[in-house]
Length: 232
Image (cartoon, rainbow, N blue to C red; front, top):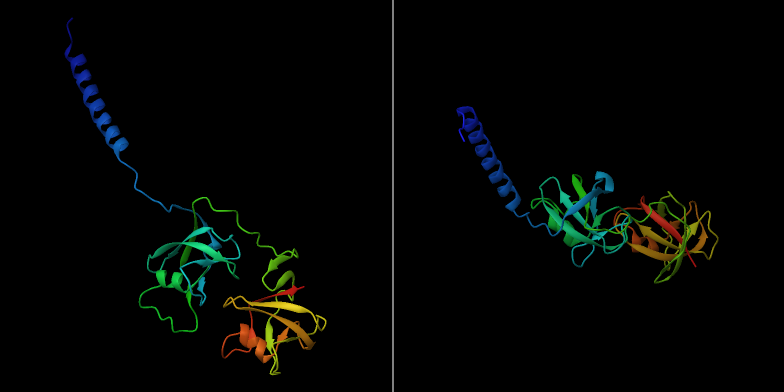
């Protein structure tokens, strides 16, 4: 069979293109994917700052959005440091870092001696197949705690002040009857205490000096971010 020059040239081009394409396909197909044992997924917490709370133990996250055991990747966008951490307890924020976790991502030259420990440029992501987030809405459904059954949230949105009255830890209230037990949680430091209403006060809940010392911060007379719950 006789071949024309046009056919020969066309066939040559075809074989060259096929060879190059096959080589490229083989190279791309043979490359092994990089190992990523902690693949982060959806970004959560809406880019809000991440605070630190003075809490000992292994590095971990406290959260009011995700159940204990959830894995979260926290990236400090100011220095590029990232660490994957488990949620270890509940707290008053989407992601609050304990001492060891905060030290792992903070800048080496940052000052931990200041009054505020916070990462303002931060990204938080779910790692792996995380459980569904805890609903953000508060409900009056009771849950068992060590010191009793904590029920409905009261005084929602109120602050808690300090009364100079001494004596055993107690509280005063303009709304709750004397004898009512309440659990007061400082959402800025994670401290909480259960106290009894012992008298009438000028606000929903005012703590005496002994009770305030259990949950408040030195030098302050008001707790601005607080959760108050009835205890039965």
